[in-house]
Image 1 (tube, rainbow, N blue to C red):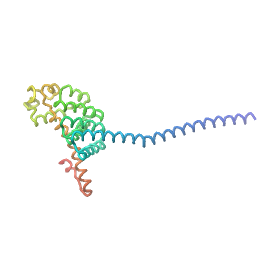
Image 2: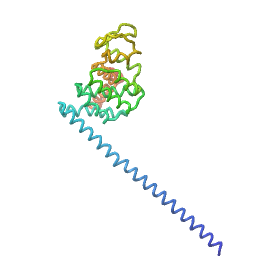
Image 3: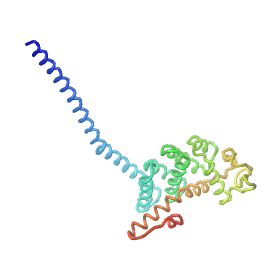
Image 4: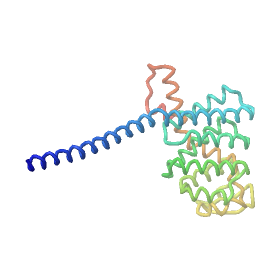
Length: 254
């Protein structure tokens, strides 16, 4: 009899343990299901609503600056396409669009500049957060009319001060007449103190040299964005004509 009772008690204990384990598993599955549904529904809806609100706010700001609704929608749709195809944040980018246009830059040029800055960050090995910080700082420089050494420090902190970007900038400045190339790697400012400097002295030449102007900035950003603009143009053509065949050379030639 005692043996039977002992076995019975053991089974009761096992039953209790098993029931508790099943309840815990059930609760975990239930919580997982709730979290999964939340991530698939409420979280996505909230994110989508936030994006919609930001887009609406930016549209209002740009329209108040004198742009018509159709033009704003077209340019923001292009920016939305770019952000969807890359890892860059749409709301961060459109937040800075109005800062660019407020400095007198045209809307289309500003959208292209945003793409260029994002691709410059990517080529520098930096993420969307670093690109967003750079966009804000560069909008400040645009507002001032030229890049200063203190502005450039933020770019250096974001690890976007690459040799390639410096060279692209120097070449653009020479093309636009704010610099003159006077040696193999030597340049003279034509808009500031007339200082002669090398690429390694890039940062030190900015404030007094005043050669890295808004026009130079926009030319460089647009150069970086050229690839994205060409791809978008090709995709638009293919959407208009589904039978259109595109070769790599068509993209490279724009």
